[in-house]
Length: 350
Image (cartoon, rainbow, N blue to C red; front, top):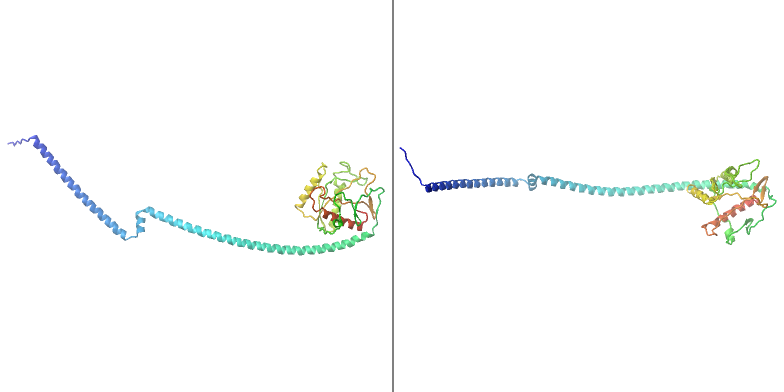
């Protein structure tokens, strides 16, 4: 037997809507109660974390919760340590600098004291050397005094006419300047140290008349590059004599007038200036040879004992022409002093 139910379309739709609403209500209720349960669990976790937080320091919590804070803290501590080290290092540097300065001053003082002691010893040595030299000079003077017995005479037949216009004792002076030479300018009240002498030759090639005994090949009129036959050889002989009296001599034999004669004085000046950069000097002599040429009258020849020699002459430059030469009068006094001694030993030699 079959039961047959006939439903209308409206009723079917009504039942479906009701069923759907019922399902939606059930699902919503489930979600609602689930959210409440989840919040309760989170609250429980927060409570546990708070209780854990209370047992630890705030700094330790930050170190655990935020790892970056730990590294930042370490960096900060490192920076502070570096700054402290820099401060310490800076103070140490200042202290070391001060200590070095003090040590430097001590070294300077030691060097200064050592130099003073050395200078004192050198002064004593120099005094002793000076005493010995004075003693030698006294002995030399005694030896030179023997020359007083040697006869000296002028033997030239046709000497040049004397043209001096100033005389101081036996010293004759030819003054070609505008200066009026007073007695104060002529008194040889000057003391010259003779420990160091420089001899040079502006005209190194000035030669002498050749002879059978002393021949040479000239390179010009009374000139030769063979310095054994020029005025340079005179400088060599003078050096040897001065050395016998313990006088130090620097003899320069450079060519200043060869291959060109012009500019000789400029070249010789450079030579002397270079010598003075290395050697000290008390006396500087530019040694020349006077020329005779073809003149019938010439400088007199002097016979000293059995030897013949030409008279010598001192040429003293001044600043009369405008050149800088403030000490020319000292040179004049020195020349007069030497000439007085020469006149005493060998009359008419100068």
